Image (tube, rainbow, N blue to C red; front, side):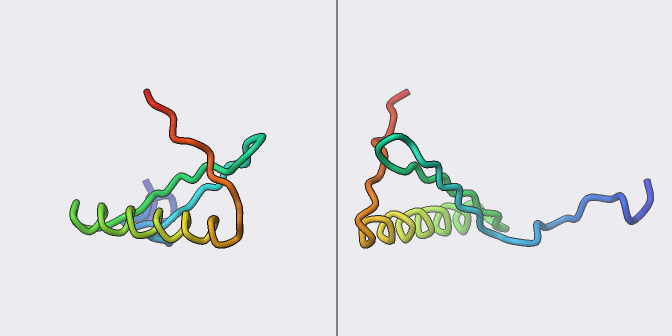
Length: 68
């Protein structure tokens, strides 16, 4: 495998937020990359909370969480 075809060790961005639009609300998915489990958990919850707060501040309804 050549150096140009190798996958990078770290992603370019550390956070990703996916916003899905449903019929009545939005659904959020948060993905983070971190060096430790604790850091990943903290970043994921902080990012999710900030995204939810932004939606609520803009009066955008959030889809209910599905029980599996």
